[in-house]
Length: 92
Image (cartoon, rainbow, N blue to C red):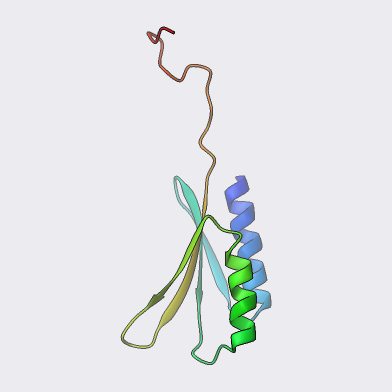
């Protein structure tokens, strides 16, 4: 599992420990975490949740008019480095 997946899994596990069952999805350039947020989340629990998702590269909250709230976090995958960045005909 790439490092982004490991980080996303750790975030998901911590959110689950706080009572927000989470799921992780692997994508080409990032791993994402999503969790449904109940309306009855206390201010103290929100602080803990924000501390957890702050470890991601990006995070946010998607709220719908149906009172559904989904917390999401994204951990980017590292861009591979190569010694041939400019291609075979690149001259310095």
